Image (tube, rainbow, N blue to C red; front, side):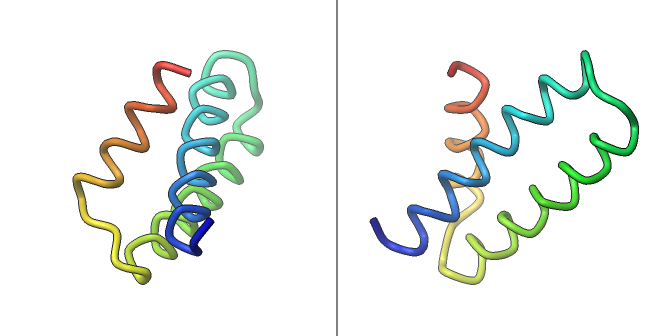
Length: 64
């Protein structure tokens, strides 16, 4: 797995966790997840991910 694949996978997983936390979590947990998601998004972009790559990762998380 390349660093980009790992970043996109972690971004996708964090996005899914945000969806769950929105329904069940606290504001502090949601804030922390958003921060983590932004870090993975930044990492993926640094490694060359396109907007389409990130959108695909979000869709993958939504259907998982």
